[in-house]
Image 1 (spheres, rainbow, N blue to C red):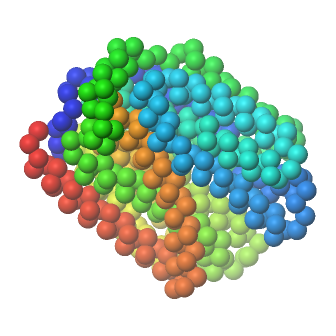
Image 2: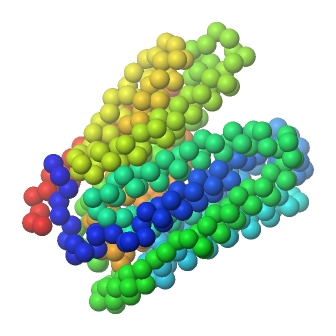
Image 3: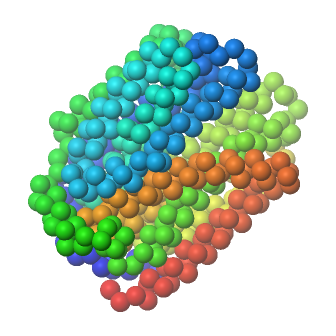
Length: 416
């Protein structure tokens, strides 16, 4: 099945003449900002202890609060920034995000107590969102026939940043110091700010058209969408994407320890298991995005969901750690096709005038999956055993695939 013809005017999907250059800048900026935002993960507990938190239990608790504050802030304001991007332009939102993150990251390096750390981490989530803003810009500027490849390429930069960031964070504090590492992160994001300001270009006429479209439909973003079923299906899929990735997080170290006789290497192997899916996604995202341009995004979404559900089942029955690492890597490959296809389907199901707002909800759905996934994994693992986590997640993924199949069939029968 190919994607149904969108109801918005076809000229919206011709693409901007600047889309290739903008993609290169957004790829650099997304990679840089994600590296800067994730490099603190290895040494966050150390920094919390330096700020005066004494007991190991309190260090763990405050580290979790500080880490989650950024996710909460980003989930809260993503739709708002998307709406403002529709109204005032996508480039100004990227400039705001990169400059705000550069300043906030530098201020984190000057925190004097743990409350300031948590507050600044929350602020980083509220003012940030460069990667999600880049997705909106590229999704709305790229020609329809190349959107899957472009969004897959952008996803590669985001996921590569999430892999490289913790590695950099494991090395840099030992070389220059913990606080200085935050200053270096702020400088990295400032480079993204300069590149965005100098090189990204938007078509002024596009902003004028979006404003005219919004005035013609004053009822709000959702009233401008001719068929909301694809959008709701993609929001659910975005949540499931992160739920499938994160549900294993609470149990992974204990699960790996049950598969090993040498307990001194449990943490190292658990790190490999966690990184395997991200590595698979990095290697496959642009290729699956290109495949979506050829076969249709609906087909890629359903195929990736089914493959993910199938790959989760044997993870419950592995007997060696290398088997788990291999299966997580393959699952990362299957998950890689979801994000560009989700974005592409939403983009081509809504008018340009509200694309940023709706894609902001997609970002919030992903953050919700990051929160719900560990909660589901922890509850199911505690009540029914760790193997049940994989089987429960697999069942949820299969349900999402079935729902997408039903919606795609109904949308496919809709007159163009």
